[in-house]
Image (cartoon, rainbow, N blue to C red):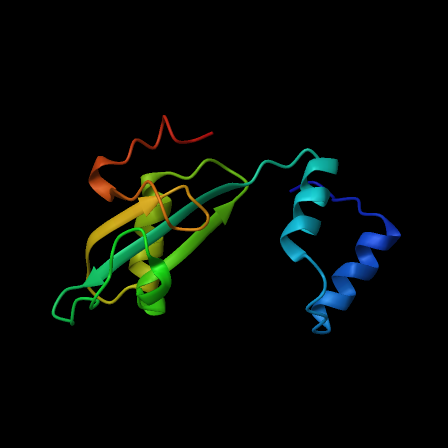
Length: 125
């Protein structure tokens, strides 16, 4: 991994965020730093149900508000996300995952697709 360069103001903002300053837009700051350093970040939102567990109640696919936090994961990395990357998340984060779905929508509202139907090549950008 190459070194990353940040400005003094960005450094001060990172320290403020680390110390609990909720006024710092961490995602915006990350985007600025990534752009300045030529970093492309890939994202995939993953949801599943656990076999033998209770299905989430009163959930609509577009509404992630009620989805159990222990059955979802936002995967972000600097390389295109592969099926193997998702399988590792499911192995490490889920108990007995079934019906896994993914979307590249960071808000988890649209584009939910069954994992086996997701085109990792077409959605790598």
